[in-house]
Length: 69
Image (tube, rainbow, N blue to C red; front, side, top):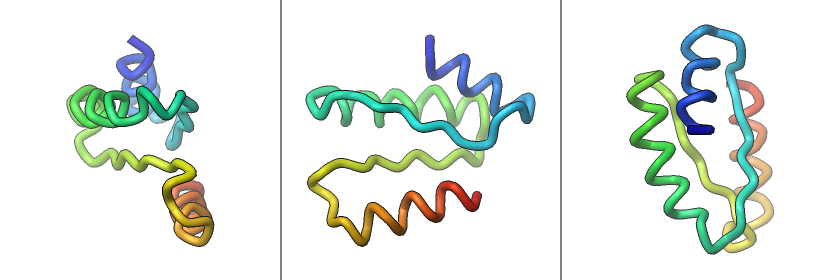
C-alpha cells in the first residue's frame, strides 16, 4: 500500500525520490515488492538498497546519485 501511494505521487510528479527505512530482515522483500509495484506505476523508476553491508563510499555514491536524479 505504501509503495502504491509513493508510485502515485511519483507518477503525478509530486515527488521525484523517496527514502524507505526498513529493518534489515525485510530489506530484500521490500526491494522485490518495490521493483514490482513502482515499475507498474512509474516505468523508469530505479530502486536501490543501502545497508551496512554496502561500503561507505558506495553508499555515499548511491545517495548522491539518488538525490541528483
